[in-house]
Each structure stands twice: as structure tokens, then as C-alpha cells.
Image 1 (cartoon, rainbow, N blue to C red):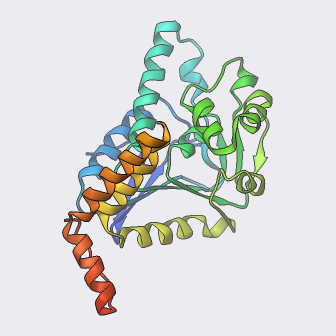
Image 2 (image 1 turned 45 degrees about the vertical axis):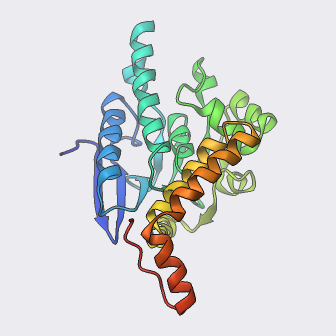
Length: 259
């Protein structure tokens, strides 16, 4: 399937998805829908074990939503767009394969929310982050109010959301919003290195690991432990588990097949 605003390259079992929508790689209905479709394709592609998501150019990861599309929408129109956004972001968050955001520049509004749907985030030293919706008279509508507080806590989340000011990459790292800050020219290569390393892990175990963390974070501890146990049992039943343990005993590198 061809895409107008997305680029996708697959190499070494890693798919690099680039949002290419000038100016600023802004999000609109078509971009959201293309993300949903492409992520669905990558989910079932056996040649892909990890995904890197980034923005085209050197200035922006994603500089928010396309206000030109939103400005004249009525309430029903905005409700429809919000649903499209939610489906797209949930598709990324709920992929069984790890997704790494390579944040090469500004992550504003919806772009910040998009980054939060990814499992891991690597930021350029030039990256900046902000929930700027309050400055437009609205609030984040793509999950930002909920996902950010799970990372930084409610107090800091309110600071970021209420004031709508940019923070730099180092501050984002201190708040554990990003996992690593690298020189600007290394952000994509570092994300690809991480993805290639993850692509060598046992796919089912990685899938179960993600399910245990993601699902378990939304329930009470006893329920989370039950989920973890079920995911453990599923991973233990695989051929990859036998290969991994055999490789350890034989002092060799395991070769995982995803079975």
C-alpha cells in the first residue's frame, strides 16, 4: 500500500517509519489514518521485529496537529477527528512489537502525545517538548493528559499541561520522558541500533513482556501479577524459550525464530 505522508524502510528486521508532511510533519486526518494502516501492516509482517518512528527533516519530530484542518470544525467534526486520533495512537501503543521514537526536533502538542505512545524515546540534544494546547484554548485530546502523568507524576504533569511551555531534551531526560539524549546527528542511528538489538531478542517473550507491563500498569497489583504469570507461561511454552536456555547452557548466541 502506498502512503502520501509516510515513508517506510525495512532493514535488519527493523522498520523505520518517517512522517513526511511539510511543514513540521503536522498531524491531520490522513496522517492519522496512514499511521493506523501502516502500523497494522507492520504488526503482521514477519520480517519486522521492531519499529522506529521519526519525523522528516532536522527541525521537527511532529510540530503538533494541523490547525488549518481543525479551526472550522463543529463539535461533531471534532469528535470524529478525536476518534481517528485515538485509534491511531492506540494502534501504536498496543502493537505487540516495540516502537522507538527517534525525536529529532520539536515535539509539540499532538507530536508530544505521539511520542508518548511509543515504548522508548531517544531525543536529539536539540529536541524540545511542550503541550501547547492550553495556549489555543483547548486541552490535549490524544491521550496526553493521561499518559504523561504515568511517567512524571501528577504534579509535574499539571505543570507541563497548565503552562504549555517548552522543555529541552535534558529536562525531558531528567523527568524520564525520554530514555536517552544524543547528539543531533546520532538520534536516528541510535534508535536504529536499539531497535536492531531488540530485533534479536525472542519475539514472543518480548511481546509477552510488553503485554505484562502495559496491561499490568492499569490494574491492581494482584491482577497485574496474574497477568504477568500468564504472560510468563506463554513465553515459557515457546520453542524460543528452549533455544534460549540451550544457548545459555552451550555458551553460544541464541537464534530466535518467533515460535
